[in-house]
Amino acid sequence: MATDVAEQAEGYARLLDAGLAPIAAVSRRIAELKPRFVLFTARGTSDHAALFAAYLTEIRLGIPTGLASPSAITVYGARPDLRDALVVGVSQSGGSPDLTEVVRVARDAGAHTLAVTNNPDSPLADIAEMHVDVLAGKERAVAATKTYTAELMALLLLVESVRGIDAADRAELDRLPELARGVLADPTATQLAARYRFADRLVTTGRGYAYPTARETALKLMETSYLSALAFSGADLLHGPLAMADPDVPVLAVVGDGPGGKAMGEVLGRLAERRADVLTVGSGAAPANAVRIPTPRVDERFSPLLDILPLQQLALSLAIARGEDPDAPRGLKKVTETL
Image (cartoon, rainbow, N blue to C red; front, side):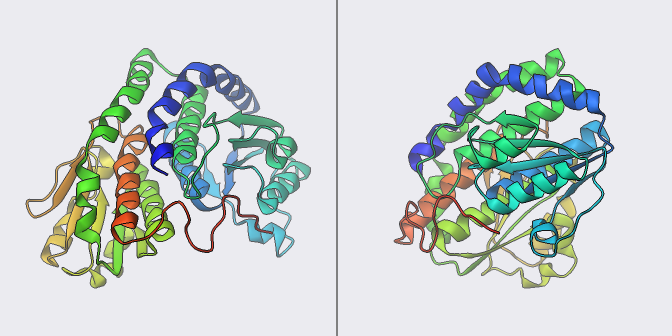
């Protein structure tokens, strides 16, 4: 897992170099098709990358977007009318039968289909009309890290290429590999692992582009440390779950300095009232009583590619501190095949 985590900056550079032209070609095709709706289908870690892409698609392209419930098709036999829609299957392995079936049904129902995978020879890539290779290389660990961030980068480039990447955005994208190296070199996350060694429960939260990061962090903590980690959007946290916040339930809050981060202000204030143990991650300001892992200030669209890195390191170090083996999480295997 440590090796996979360390390779992510190079993964960003690889996609910006070798991956951008093929992604731009797919983006041009999507722009020509002018889909009236975009539906993402994914599981697990890839579902969080798909959620990030859903935010991007609605905010940057103005196209209504949703996340599919594969069971509606594979278990209940639903056959929704998907004419003129774009259905995007996101999967590291491209090997899950239910995602492949969703894309197959969508294609038969008149949808345009795209697979985003780390395996161009996979069943999912084969069934879709179009494919984007995230170019992450072989992932060693069961807990996905570098394939997740490769999906984020590939989906970011895909959406932004539909819109058109201007010079300012290209310059900021080109900075991401070096910024990622700096984040990965910061020992703060590893040093903080001992703080949560004896935690039983933990909450992660964020808004907008940061919400997928919060969800992916919770999954990594559950996979590697077997913690009961619950992820909420900042808005949803205020609608009831805030009641569980107290000094014994740590909160990991992803807080940037864009609109999503600013919207977390009330959340952080209410957590302070509850005297919650808060760790903030990101470029946004932290309350006086919070511990903070800073990340570089970039456009909020790009923050998820940096903010997740110290949280992956935290999950790795916390698992080791708790006497667990993050490379052999109990009951899990690399490819999960759901029907």
